[in-house]
Length: 243
Ligand SMILES: [Zn+2]
Image 1: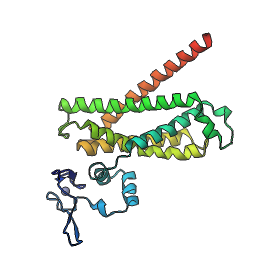
Image 2: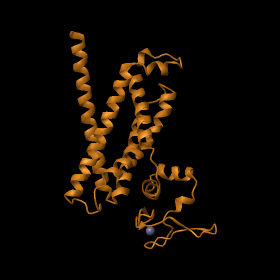
Image 3: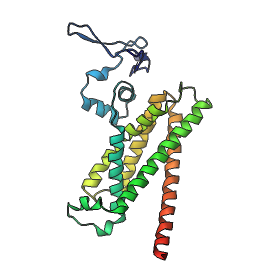
Image 4: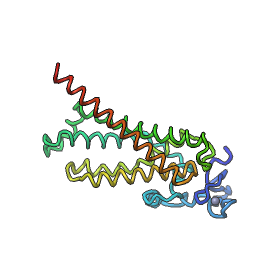
């Protein structure tokens, strides 16, 4: 067994196991040597309770998901959220041509613009992740914050992608088409950024200030990528109309 592969959800202390099996069917939750509380109380909890605590951005729930589980749905979640985002952008672009036919959602996927929007949303997401990881790497390597013991880029990327789960709130906007407002989308964005910041804080055990600074830099990087994409699109359209 790999030693100290888990973390205490209360105090972030490393732990070798979450529970001990006494072979006669008796399982006992491991108690943390540092804080004397159960290492991971969530192993007994229903997934719905864990989800609610994660929605409330509780540090303990984030530690449980990121350190004590093998949840590897980040890539599927990422593609699903990008599809929702691409659809919303596409429908905003062709808003005047919408019809109420449910079969339209199939037709939309045949549109090249849809794939363009998907690529743009993916590029912006990578710009965000690149900005955050780049900033954290520089900040931790140069020792601006003594919270992080090392830059774990793979774990950070997993944490960033998983903490984007708030984007599934875009689903109602996709289902009810135009019954969404920029305010709702702004609130979803705010929630996702808060979750991203909490994931960084939990993984690196760093200060809230450093996590917020990383998210702000990621957002700046994402905005720059979005502006560059818009500029490129308008130039392509101009060239298309000229020739
Ligand atoms: Zn502890």
